[in-house]
Amino acid sequence: MQVYGTEQTKEQEHHPHGGIALRHSRGVHRRRGVHGGGTSTPGTVVGLAGTSWTLDSYLDENGTLVPVLPGTEVTAAFGPPDGKVAGSAGCNGYGGDYQLDGTSLSVSSLVQTLKLCTEPEGIMEQEARFIDLLGSAAECRIENDRLVITDAAGATTLIFVEEDAPTGLAGNTWWTLVSLAGENGTQTPVLDGTGVTVTFSAEGSLGGSAGCNHYSADYTVDGATLTIKPAVRTEMYCNEPPGIMDQEDRYLALLTDVASYRMEANRLILADSDGTDLLVFEKAAQTPNLPLVGTDWVLESYSTNGDAISSVIVGTKVTANFAADGNVGGNAGCNHYGGEYSLDGANLSVSSLFSTLMYCETPGVMEQEAAFMSHLANVSSYRTEGDRLILTDAEGTDLLFFVQAEEVPPAPLAGTEWTLESFSSPDGGESVSSVIAGTTITAVFSPDGNVGGNAGCNSYGGAGYQLDGAELSIEPPISTKMYCGEPEGVMEQENRYLNLLTSVAGYRIDGNRLDLLDESGATLLTYSAGRA
Image 1 (cartoon, one colour):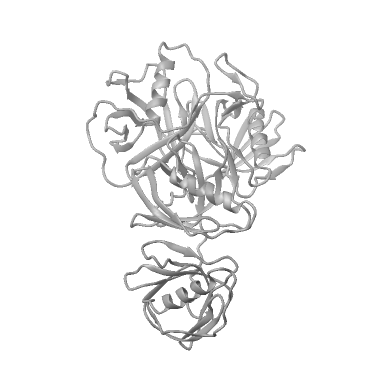
Image 2 (cartoon, helix red, strand yellow):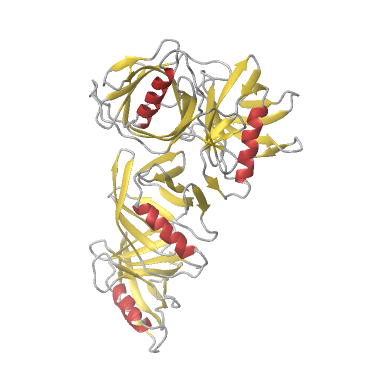
């Protein structure tokens, strides 16, 4: 991350891109400790988000719970709109991501300012310990208005108490940027597809998402007068949508020009010393995080080199669905894929990946697919932020960024032209083969009870089919008698396809996808919907 501004301390180093390199906690650290009393109550921890918390005590290096130093205040605000946590660590402001799954809690991507405080004695050591313990969070529970956080070994590491209800600017309110002042002073709406947020803690720190990067800064307020110091941010680079980095730079620069604030209904407006409106926010809606399992996800962007983020190639669609039976599958952009996954709280691992073997000629699509499959195999944890899913590796680096897929109404079996994408291999098992490049196999189920289409070389038809709920049976088809020598293997593929049709015992439709199944429920043929 980098400081957005010119102030430095002697602990900071110049960044080659003109910023200043600062400490950045990227991973979720695990630390063993002494077991504390109590156990987590099953179910989601109600009240974690939407409450401002003040640290009461923490686990010291000797494994003893000790109170915070007199004269210091350490806080945490868990924001519901985008899975962010922010607050004051005692001296510096901090911010990061959090994931809550039942009672499992993980905190990652922590950033903080780098002020040096000398009073009271030990404040910097307490702050370092707090940030370390927050990053080691594994479980949480709320008992009598107290938030108790434990590590992976079950040791109680942090105990918070609920703050008094805040008034004015500070509190546990999250704000979403609506517009910002352009170079000519006129208000410009934020770019579609970007989310810029902020929350102000009562201890003088703010944080949120700048659109691409997370950021944190200190502020002071006196009545309606507001001063914001230069922010620190992570160092990701996003290229979609176009202009996102320019917007982020402009936003962070405008923060340092703020001189006052006012609230109008559900809006927060930050203005400069001349009274010109710079930033206009709306109160963020508290939308619940979608579950990992059972949600249809579509890839929006992925990590390329280091912290660089690339959007998905236009015209390609990469999807993922984590089913309740422990299987994950979808489309990797060209080929269909599948595998297994295991969950332990926010920890996620994917294994036994396989895919069809089609080759797609769209420039870059195969390289994108290879990167996606490699990232998927290296996933170590996940978090959801509303309708977004982020998959992260063991180092805490965000690899894959998904959004909830738009709901597609299921295409009707009859009257839709279905195009074959893959079929079960002759050797059986779970292996599948993609359709040979340069061939097209189709199926149309007519309302009169017959199915026909193109088998790759010959046309076929005359095959009656019967439906009974999700059960489907198909009679042997009749085909023309042409012979095709190209591409290689087309006749063998055709014979395989026509034989599989007679083995069909059931079907399922998911949006624009049709799977024909055998008696055991295994997929024999997979189609996508074309034009009727």
